Image 1 (cartoon, rainbow, N blue to C red):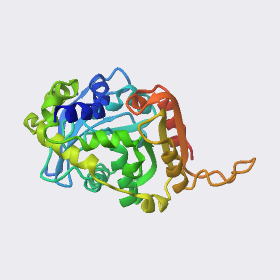
Image 2: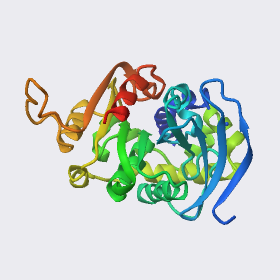
Image 3: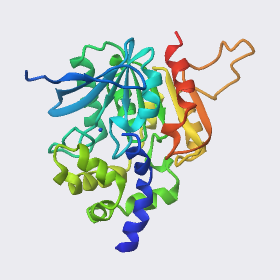
Length: 303
C-alpha cells in the first residue's frame, strides 16, 4: 500500500506549482474589491448554481472568458496569465466543485454535472456567448460544456487533456489507478493540502475530495463521437513533453476537422479549430508558460 501511495503522488506533483500561485437565493456577493497588481480590480463573489454554491472571481472588461483550473487547483491556478487575459477581456475564474472556496456537495466529481454548473453560471451572470479556457481537469469540464451547451459558447481553449482516458500515457494511467482514500493522508504532507486548508469552507472534507477525484480520474471515457460533432472553434494546446500522448492530440485535432488536407496557398481550406504545441514545457508547467497568452489571445480575438 505504501508503494502504491508513493507512486500515486507523482500524479499530483503539479499541485505543488498550483499552490505557489494561488487564495438572495441566487447570488451572495462579497462587498469589496481587492487591488490586483497584475491587471485590474478583482470582484470576488459566490453564485448558487445547479445546487452548488460556486466561488468565482472577475477581472477586466470586454468579451467574457471563463477559466477552469486543473485537479486540486483553484482560481489561483492561472494567476501568472490571468492578468494578461484580463487586459482586454472580462475574465471569470471559477473554483470547481469541492475545490478552492467552493464547498463539495452530495454528488460525485462528474464532468457532465460540473459542465452544467458552468452553464448555469453563464446564464446567471448574463454573459451571453462566452469563451472558455480549461486546463487538465478544466478541459474535461470545458469539453463537456462544449458538447452539452454549445449555444452558450463562442470559442473554446483546451489545454493538456485527452478526449478519452487512454489518451494519457500508460504509465500515468497506472499511477491514477493507484489513487484512493488512503492517498489522502500521504497527500497531507504536500503544499497542495496546505492550500486546501487555507481556502476550503470545509477542510475536513479533504479525504472525501481525494476519494471522489480518485474515482473520477479512474473512470473510462471516450468522447470521440461527440467531439467529431463539435462545430465551435476550438484551440487545442499541449506541451512537447506532455502527459497526453502526442499522437492523441493530432487525433483530437483531426476529429475537429484539422489536419485532414492541405489548406491551399491562400489558406482558404484552413479549419476553424487550431492546434498549438508549446516547446520546452510539460503538463505540469504548461499553465504557467509565458507563451500561453500569445497563443490564446489571437485565437480568441480572431473574428
